[in-house]
Image (cartoon, rainbow, N blue to C red):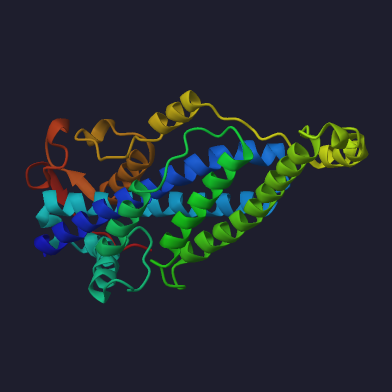
Length: 299
């Protein structure tokens, strides 16, 4: 069984990498979206909700993935735990992951795991997505939104409808279509104003340029200034989001989600474990030397 658990852990690690890559991409898009939404007086409430729902789903998936990784790690390091009755529920959790992996690419959805082939494709798609480091005009924003539309479309086809992430991705893709329409309208306004206000080579026709003055003023009231994001700010955001979570070699000092999982796991076992004599905290999990495992019926 240990070999199966090792294989499950490898799949969990790959899935975690794909999920964190998706989370990093979503963060980049969210940072730019907030700037864009502010320019349009916060009118994109649907898109903001879609981003929040997807971010929440990713956070939940990361939590379950790291919890399963921790369980698998403890079983690999302490095979004797597999024979204890208190481990039955934890083994059941890993069994669900194993069943999903055995189903194949479009197997049953289980929180915290993506099929390895799907995870690899997600990583490849997100690593090859175009990068827009300079957003200084509506044309730049149009290309930015279209690039993310293309990326989301590639991700959507990887997940069947029974996967919750599929609905979140589709909702966000649909929302970006509405944003793209607004940006295209601004591009049209910008072009029309430039054409109507441009000087003509024909001196006679220039006398009639005032005919368009009121029309230009009306168009200018509908025009929105394109928000600008400098390349240096984009690079700083990119550097801040490149950190991909990895299991710390020193689990005792780990923090964040992984530390919370460790505490929950410890509490689950330590309720039913009685120490025998003295023990060394450095080998806290060396059960065969320092602990007498006893099982108590849970109420």
